[in-house]
Length: 169
Image (cartoon, rainbow, N blue to C red; front, side, top):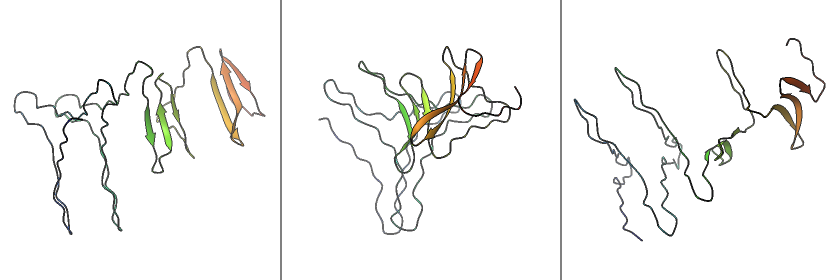
């Protein structure tokens, strides 16, 4: 195994120290890049990168993790990209979990995505567009854990699978 590096602020009964890691600033050119990554491995698993905030063991609030792109006074602000890993036997996926560790949002290796939860909503001030390639749009409900189709749109045709009242088309 390769070497280990640990960096920590001090411990205290009242408040522990803060830590900051930043790249240099520049007046006229670009500022430095900050990169955080684990090492690679030729035979075994490569290392993970874990970012997390501290928890509270008392009445205090647990720490938060915030990721934000940089702002610009005169140009375009920075973006945030999250990319799953590629592999010979399969590509990774991106998952968002809730506080209990249940997966609530998945972007699959094939580009699919799913959202789940007690309440899932989409809203827009203008419109919401749902487009499929050669597939179909299916609206279903769960009855005793099984998906039951309610409404299906395929090749421009609308199929109702349950008693349906449509007021305007």
